[in-house]
Length: 288
Image (cartoon, rainbow, N blue to C red; front, top):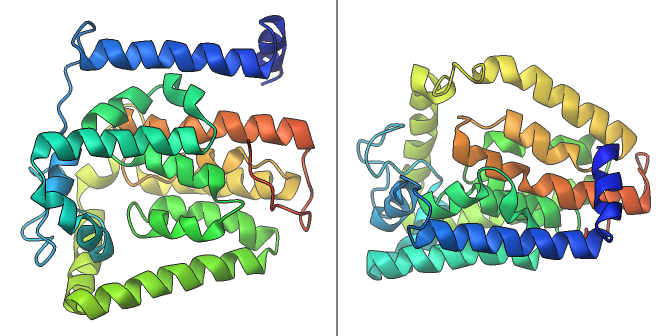
């Protein structure tokens, strides 16, 4: 990535580069949503979130089926009040939340990362996951969102384990357990049993890990590479390796999933500024 640093210095530094990228990305997004650029995408994912029945979120759901909801009962319960909105309002509001998460994480310029625009249009959660991984070094509890949705990108938590940052792992555990307990009190343990069975059944189908087999190998092949990336990154203090490992550990890799890599640039910039820290160093500061 050394060439990137040189190119950015040529155009006036990090601040100028971020502003230019943000403007370019905003114009790109505007062109897509207004139809100026042909982008044959439909908000299938946001529609599935809007259509979920919190009392029975997994009725017949399978990967690839219409309006399939594959996340934990806690997420379905969180969405419940918003499913009362008209879908057009829900879709726009969800898009604002996703894009706003990048802005809040100080990474609005990553809108130009491949997959981000598609994720925003489809209404998936990869942009939100990227934002979580940016701020997750300062607020580890936010990683519970990863564990309660896509699950396997939670491999990024090995960063804290390898670096013996037990307090961070404790925060993730406490937040996740608290969410699960509240969810069980609201909807009962049966929904969680249904979710676990759903994950197990989808793990056994070819579409789960071979959706784009022509471009990416299945999960079992990608997993060792994800483990290697996170182990190397944690040992050398390279925080930008965490979203790369999480990307490799996605249950399914498809174009929208590349939005998860939006977390790489801000973390790489932050690492470059602070220098790579060995295990045991302070990780409290988040990228700005």
